[in-house]
Image 1 (tube, one colour):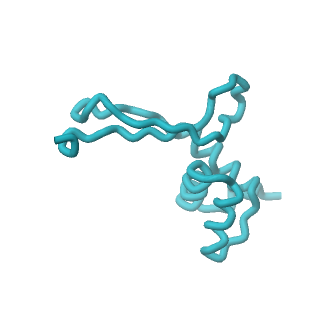
Image 2: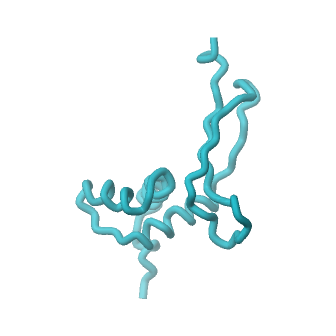
Length: 98
């Protein structure tokens, strides 16, 4: 039997992971349904976990040392410590600060 995530193209898995990370799974399922896709919440969850493993956060040394961070509420699989969740971080650009 082929695992469901293996049948989904890499580009689509990244998009599913992004949608699932930025909103609740119920909302993600509605958004994905607007494109005519029928995908269960577990597939979205797996896409989020797969995407989370590949995320690295780096600051651009040429931009401001300020930013905004927000938690998504989605726990990172395998980490039981409270407060360990996927994060969204936006660094402020120097040219927009003036």
